[in-house]
Image (cartoon, rainbow, N blue to C red; front, side, top):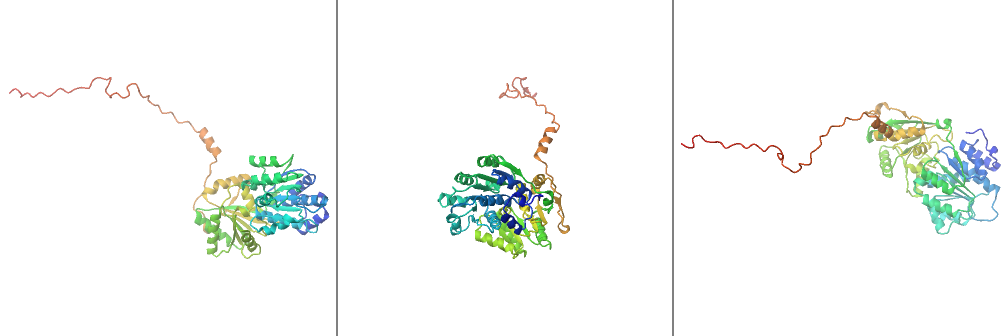
Amino acid sequence: MSSMTFEQLDLEPILVRALADMGYVKPTTIQSQVIPEAMSGRDIMASAPTGTGKTAAFLLPVCQHLLDFPRRNAGPARILILTPTRELAMQIGQDARAIVKGTHLKVEVIIGGVHASEHLPALTKTTDIVIATPGRLLQYIEEESFDSRDIEMLVLDEADRMLDMGFINEVDRIAAEARWRRQTMLFSATLEGRGLMRFAADLLKDPVEITAAPPRSERKKINQWIHLADDPEHKFALLTHILRQPDVSRSIVFVKTRERLEELASRLQQEGLDNAWLRGEMEQVRRVEALERFRIGRVNILVATDVASRGIDLPQVSHVINYDMPRTPDVYVHRIGRTGRAGNKGTAISLVEAHDMPLVLRTERYLDEALKRRVIDELRPQHKEARVVSRKKKDKDRKTAAPKPKEKLRKRATKDKGRPKWAGAAPPRVRPPKIDDDADE
C-alpha cells in the first residue's frame, strides 16, 4: 500500500465513496502510479501481478474521464475493455458497476456462451463502458451490430494471456475499428517477450511504462511450500490427506488438462470429497453454477484448469494446491493469487514428482526465493529429491572436461585394394609331393 489517499488522486467524491463502500481505504502501488498518468491522457503499458489492484487502476481513471466529459447525446460505448476470459470480464463488470454506483454511467458485458438477447442493451441502448472478450465482440462488429466509432479509450487487460490464447488477430482488428480513440492502456503480468513488445508497439503511442511488484508484506501473506511425491498414487494420497485437514476450509486444486480434471474430480468424489469443477469450453450456465456452488459453500473444493487462475475473485480461499505444476512461473503466480486476498493470509502447496523439478527451479528463480520442502510423517517420500543440472552447467562441464587422448589410428593402404592378401609378397610355399620309396619294387 502507498501512503497516498484516493482524495489526493483528484478523484470525484462519489467515486471515493464507492471505493470506501467496497472496503478500499488507500490506493495500492499500481493504482497510485497508473491513475495520475492515465488521467493526464498518456498511453499506459503496465506490468502488475494478480492481487495488486490493477482492475481499479484502470477503472478509476476511465470513470473519472466519463464524469469530467459527460456525453451530450445518446449513443454507443465510449470505453472498451478487452479481457481474455469470460470470468475475468464478468469480474471486471461487477467491479465497474460497484464503482459507478450512484452515477449515471452504464456498464455492460459482452462474452461468449450466453444468448445474444443478453447483449441487446450493449448493442442497442446508450452505454458508457463495455467489457468484452475479443471473439464475441468481433462477431458483433462483423455483423455491424456493435459501433466502435465513439470509443475514446481502449483497455487491454491480461494482454499476455490474450497472446497465449491466440487472440492477437482479433485484438488487432478491434483496435483498428476503434482507431479514433484518444488513449490506450495495456496491462500484463510481465512486459517480456518480443511478441508482447511488438503487440504493444503497434497499439500504443509513446506509452509510460509502469512496473508494480507487490510489496514484500503482501507477498508474505501467502505461505508456500512443496511436497515431494514418488508417483501418481502417492501424489493422490498426499492430496486427499491435505484436503481433509481442518484448516483447509476452502481450496482450489489446479490441474493442467481437461482430461486430468475430469479424472481427478471423479476420484475425489469417490473418496467422499465433494467438489465442483471449472474448465475451458464449458457452457456459461454450467460455469456460473459451479462458481456459485463454491461461493456459497455447498462445496469447498474447486478443481480447475488455468482458466480459473486469472480474473476470478473467489472469497476466502484458504488453500491453492498445484496438483500439476504450471508450465510457466507467471501462471504459478496467477494461480496462487487466488488465496491471500483482501488482507487475509493464504497457503499455496505444490505436489511435485521428479519430472516436475525443472519447473520448480524455474519458479524459484522467477520468485527469487526457495519454496520450502515439507513432509507428512505417514506419507514420507521413499525417493530423494531429483537433482536437476541446468543446461548452462552441462555446457560448462562439457567445455571444461579434460580432453580424451586421441586414439592412434593406422592408415589403411588403399593401393592394393582388391588384391589377394598374398599379392606383392613372396609367393606361397608349395609343399613338394611325397615320394613313396617302395614304388619301384
